[in-house]
Image 1 (cartoon, rainbow, N blue to C red):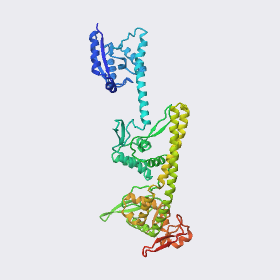
Image 2 (spheres, rainbow, N blue to C red; image 1 turned 90 degrees about the vertical axis):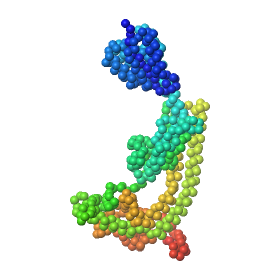
Image 3 (cartoon, rainbow, N blue to C red; image 1 turned 135 degrees about the vertical axis):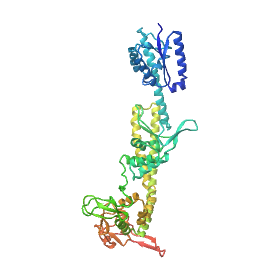
Image 4 (cartoon, helix red, strand yellow; image 1 turned 180 degrees about the horizontal axis):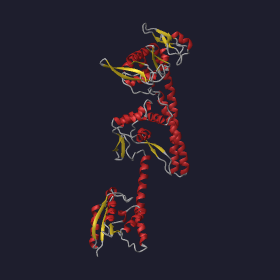
Length: 534
């Protein structure tokens, strides 16, 4: 009685490419073996998956076939044991499973008579060898990848915003690609301190760069975007950050600011919360009920052929008034605190001079920090040379390396903060001065979101509409400063306007207080002395 066999062939993509394995070649050899030994081939299963486990599509179907077709075969044939498995532990378990189905596994090019006890030694060798080879290949790959990463070449999964290319030496390198512009914008928005992480992520998603909350958080912490590569710690080496060969998407200063914000080391800008509101109700969420102190809400009512908007209390009070009237009175409030142009020009000149002096000091401090950074980098290079020359052991190297890395990170953050401190600050002040000069018009022309940011930034306290006037208990200190210098009126503690002379006797002016500064008279062109002492 002839024996019946199931033929099994397997190859993985890299084996077929590098070693020339072929599913057809294996199948032809197995058929020839069956013909020579007069074995009936009843079924054929083939896989193109790794043999690290038996969780392979064709092998699962093979087991199902044996479950539903008992005694259909008594042999499972493959050309070599590494085609069967590359995991010794799982191999023994699968051999026991096959034995329960009365099926004997055999490699045609590595035959074993398992009824002879000594053959089990050869079986252990055949099963262990592929696993050892796999482990060695995996280790070599990991070491090669780590070596490439240490050289600054990104060889792992391409990060979002980058694409893979080849350099002039035909080696892989990543370059900014689709989404790079959006990712750069995301870092800049977070660094501004005016936007939350999730609002920036949603903006990216809306513009086509899809990213989950967790992935976006990891993206913001990945130094690859500032042109560096982070190497994880191993048993032999500590954690390390190296300079990459790829082009950064964001500069180091912006990246450092984002890290400070994410870790809570830098306080976000005190930006007003934008309340859900219609353009007709910009003050919703900022107005306070004069009766009960609750926030006023707003809604529209239909009547006389149109829609009319009202602010009203949602806590049962009967407080209710036309939104158009309150909105107009709020603009009048902005006109009343309109800063004097001469005061703004004066402070513009003063700040420009001070910033110029600070910039020179900052440059000197930055140079000193840069020298310290170079010293640390030289010490790290020297440490690596000593390790290579066996002058120090790996434990001492790791200890010193971690200490130097910590110092290097601290100095790099210090340098970034020094640069950021004055980066574009004068341009921002010029914009702020220009904004304050024409505050009511800027407010009228802004959209609802910008209007609410203006309200919340200038008036940190609640607004109250009463007796056809909008009052407030607090005004932004900077705006109040400009409004009370060179201006005919100011505000007292009750939020009411009073003459400037009254304020100047009661409150010592905050801010810069130069004794005198000559500025050209706009009418005559001659110098005029501004006395800003309190």
